[in-house]
Image 1 (cartoon, rainbow, N blue to C red):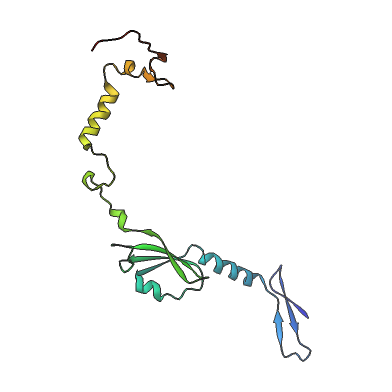
Image 2: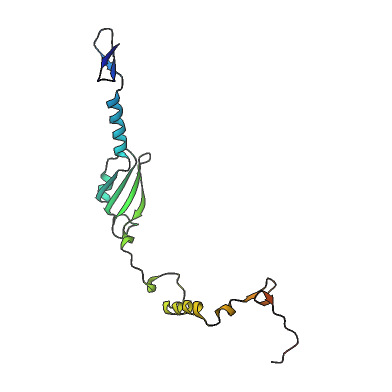
Amino acid sequence: MYLVAAGKEHFEMLAVTKDKQKVRRTINTADVDERINKAISELGALEIVANIAARDALSLSANAMVLVLDASADSTVKAGGATYAYSHSDTSWTKISEAESLDLALSWANLTGKPTSTAAEIDTAVGNARGHANLSELKKIGQAPNGTMQYDGVDLVTSGTAAW
């Protein structure tokens, strides 16, 4: 076994077989730095490809993220791009986002599950709810848990009969 100086503060340890035919060395600082730098460079890497065929042609050796600029060959993507996560353990792709909604333009006419009132009617109702002349008095009208009508938290009691 030999110790060889490798700079001011370091040395390398070498092991040699009896016949001096094979030399082995221990891992050194440069080896550690190289491995760390390689691991860091692979973190968060994003592959960018033109289409699904190019994505499928990638030879990936680890989990990865891939942005496909034209993902229209994916039946779940109508147009535009998509981002996929690749799982190396089972070689599967999972779509994690689509770019087609980036250019989204909504209109009242195309909304599903909307109220039957028009947008103008809703705007008017909201405006009236905030600006009614008797709003403070109207807010005092309510219903007790037993179902009777209340004004300012007090039950309204009626008596007698009325001939309508």
